Image 1 (cartoon, helix red, strand yellow):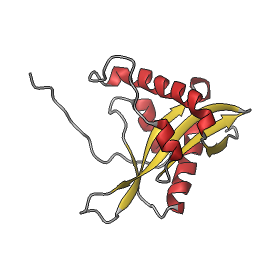
Image 2 (cartoon, rainbow, N blue to C red; image 1 turned 180 degrees about the horizontal axis):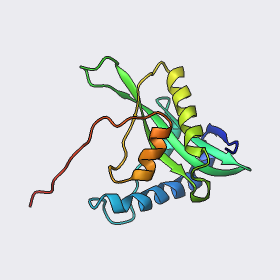
Image 3 (cartoon, rainbow, N blue to C red; image 1 turned 90 degrees about the vertical axis):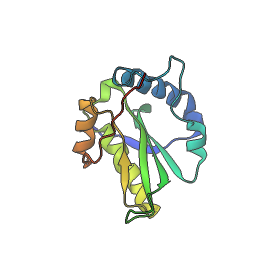
Image 4 (cartoon, rainbow, N blue to C red; image 1 turned 135 degrees about the vertical axis):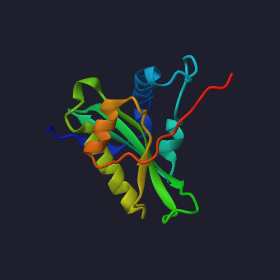
Length: 154
């Protein structure tokens, strides 16, 4: 496994991060027929970078950004045994670096950040048919929890 440097993103990274976001959208389109036509955006990356309640991390290899992800502190449901949790999103790994530990390095950094904020529950969502992403998350310890279902009513 190669050594990646993981660091907090800065506003100077925004253009590259916006391109990562479009790659995520492109990859997820086959899994979600309800996504609107381009151009769309999932995240307010500027706000996430500036927020005290979020951490946007990037992975670098040889001074090139090759991955990203964020953790955002959210309120838990009142009936759960924890008040807050970290929600992971914006998980991206450059195509040439997949399977080399980038995702693990980013997830590890986001989990450490979460622990530093007193958060011990971490969650994420992934499309049910996105088998490679599910395998990647299971490799770093995530387990399937709830399946969200939907139907379009005419």
